[in-house]
Structure formats: C-alpha cells, structure tokens
Length: 120
Image: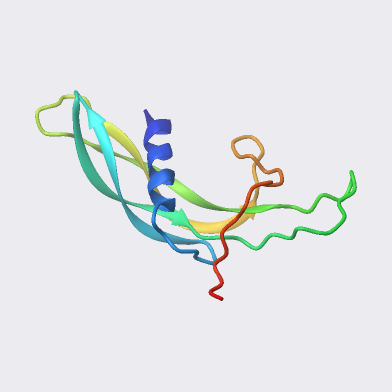
C-alpha cells in the first residue's frame, strides 16, 4: 500500500508544474483509499532538479555520478471515517540532492526529449 501511495505522490508532483531547480520540500495533496473510500490528505514531498553532467564522451570507467532529489521520509497513518483500517502514507521531513540509488531508481541515461525550463 505504501508503494501505491508513493507512486501517486510522484505522479501528482510532476503534473502541471514548471521546472524547479534545487531540491526542496513542497506541499502535496494526494488521494488515499481504505475500505473502498477515498480521501485526500495533505503531506510534504521532495521536488526539484539536481545538477547533472552529460559529458560528450563517456568511457566504461568514467560514468559521471548522477544525483537525484531525495528526502528523509517518515510515515504517518490516516484513519478514514467509518473504516477500522488506517492508511500509511509518506511524509518528507527534509530534502537534498544525493547520489542516485540504483537499488530503487533508474540511474541510466534518458534517451527521450526533456522539456526546457528556459524561456526563449
């Protein structure tokens, strides 16, 4: 259940937002479901972009360290009225750019188009 709530938070965080440089806390409103009922809760998440290099030449031994916006997370429980089962959801306490963790994140090169934050 925690993974579903985290995925919903990440999807909502990127929807309709302009680029934000630096890694920081922001407020988010996410849906949680229990006993067939859905409610929205307010929480904090980490957003922003971390500086990354994309060199012209990458050898096998000198792949640059990629950095991602990560947080110090805790979990809280929300009880939906009339439902005995609580919903656990993540709350970010602080955020910083850290080395990409290949255990839970794709850290390879992105081959698609990335929209620019710069206005022309």
